[in-house]
Amino acid sequence: MQTHTLSKEMLIAILEGIDEAIHAVDKDGFTIYYNKVAASYDGMKVEEVLGKHLLHVFPSLTEETSTLLKVLKTKKPIYHENQRYENRKGQLLETVNTTIPILNGNHLLGAVEIAKNYGHLNTLSNKLMDLQAKINSSGGSKKISSFQSSYTLVDFITDDAECVTMLQDAMLFASSILPVVIWGETGTGKEIIAQGIHHQSPRKQGPFVAQNCGAIPASLLESILFGTEKGSYTGAVDRKGLFELATGGTLFLDEMNSMPLELQAKLLRVLEDGSIRRVGGTSTIKVDVRIITAMNEPPEKCVEKGSFRADLYYRLNTCPIYIPPLRERPHDIRLLLEKKLQSRLSYQLPNVIKDMFQSYQWPGNVRELINTIEYVLLKSKQETISTKHLPLKLNRMNQQSVNPKNTGSLRTELQKTEEVMIKNAMYQSEGNVMKAAKMLDIPRQTLQYKLAKIEGNSKTPEVLKIRHND
Image (tube, rainbow, N blue to C red; front, side, top):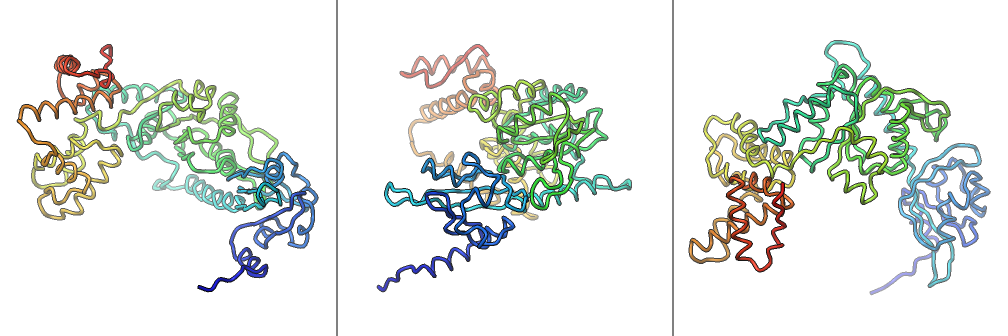
């Protein structure tokens, strides 16, 4: 097998063909490689940067703010870090950088950086917000706006006692302007509750603006929320952010615990004084916005982990709402089947299908259930729905129950199955007997009796995590 050495010309050709900005410096901070993409990002020419010290070319940077110089100092890589800086022409640039040291053993040779230009992403995001704002402000009685709520609290289908109480709380909270925190697993219907609160509130004629805070760089999310002033970065113009666009209405921030901590601090200031400052701006702008936030983990747990500021949590958690997962609301599975599936059929759904739906755990909650219903309707076409139309996850679970691995007397197998179901229910309810009884659809007193019996037969009763005082 013939091998070829990588020549300098081949290496340069490869690097120039990469559609990312690449900037390499020696151990003293002088540029040894700078590709055309980086030059286009920075508004410079390659020859203006090559051979020059980093701080000479970008005087707004310092040893503390330059990711390249930090890596030279620490010899440790930096991944996906935001950086704002001015070039020699006074243009403000915004990138997210991955920077790694160049080492020969333990000997430092330099550092190389790969940068993405978030100025372009900001521009695209702002164009989208401009379009949304124009739609929202256009005249006509038939206007459709992405800044309007489409759900009401009636759209949250349930007959579960805990959820009915939750809806009553949501109705009560809607009458105020206090902030609301909604938490529940993915797919439980947090945005339905958020829109329902807005629709029931005195602000229902105002805009409802939703923003997911997950997987968005801090700099981009900041400009989306607070807007920009002309010159804050290359191509930036005066533009309203979501706080200004939501004035008079509600701003819904989903996956709040994914918001970068520095932005959480800015949000706290907005809540305290009711004003914002655009990115690159110096003046404050008054806003009148009600904040509703949502997260898929308990807020207290997020505070403990450090993903949610404690001071912001206490400021936002005035009106808390918890949405239980679907597996804790077994009656709601049947109810949703009737509302979403049975209503579209000309025949009665077979009980075996209902039982299979109800015995599945639904980790994706109502969203997963609705998607499964649409799948079943598509597969069955005009046929009567049977097990062959169900997705693999339901059929696989059915096979496990029809063909148990162990065989024995009926009484023994039933007792084993009962113990497994009880232990699972106690685990999922975190030891809450009342919730576990509800999940198993048996009286609480019956469950208490069966738990005592299991405890008496078990050598390790702690596995049940029993907590009798609900």
